Length: 240
Image: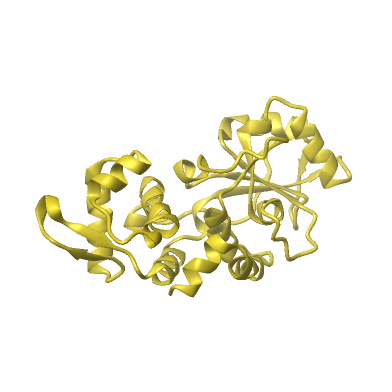
């Protein structure tokens, strides 16, 4: 069974450069942790987020050239300073759109309510193999601003798609959707998602914001609502 693609996912793989999957872990660290530090080294960052020093060096080098990161000292004594979170998130949004980067399939379900879908997931072995995304994630983060009752799910393992279709009794839907299944672009970033303890994981706050911002169905409205109310996001915009 194949769901209908919501949008095309074709885009030059090289576009964005520092906004790729593993690099996103570094950007996420800067926006969540680096913005609170008075200074940090390449090795500190690489150790904290478990990526190579070389990757951190490449990303930091580009951010310095773009004027988004400041540096002092030389060689092993070099320190970096991050004071422009809003400019970084705006640059990230210019290079990333879930509509271009992710494959999304739209469905209707034999279940009549979202609660029934979630209950079916909770009782299944797939509960921890998906993560609430987009508007469903915003609701889980306690910051919903729409009346949409659809269910959006990231598949942590896209190979389970057909089994999810059977479990949730899904049929392809051409216009709109009741259930949206998404193949993630930011797999490493998504793995930082919260464990709800009662069902599917929850997409991280920052990734939820990035995903929603260019999402065609009331996405920017919801993203901006989150940015005004969630401290982690509010800090980014306040310190622009």
